[in-house]
Image (cartoon, rainbow, N blue to C red; front, top):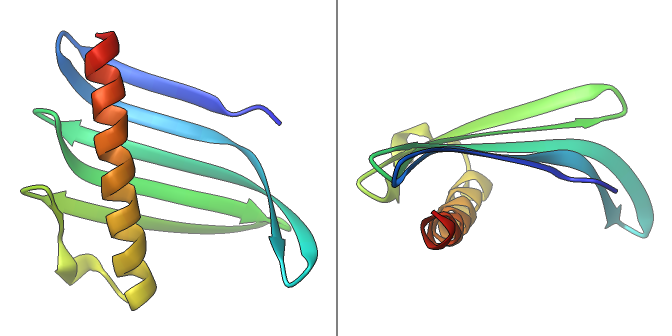
Length: 104
């Protein structure tokens, strides 16, 4: 499996980070294959938006999270699962930022 990564930088600022590719998961003992994409958007090195989508059995599911002041904007979250995912994405974003800054 190959994952494609793209990062857009402007001097010392990250503008966008994208990860996409095939993914395999095991659910209830059944192996499922899907295509997945996560795209992180930044403004002045602060996460402002994450877009994700997955395609499984030709069915596309997508979701968007918004952030302000380093926190998820709760009014855009629809379920407890959204809240948890928003926090995971924020933590992942911080790791991406450290990596980008260290390489830049």
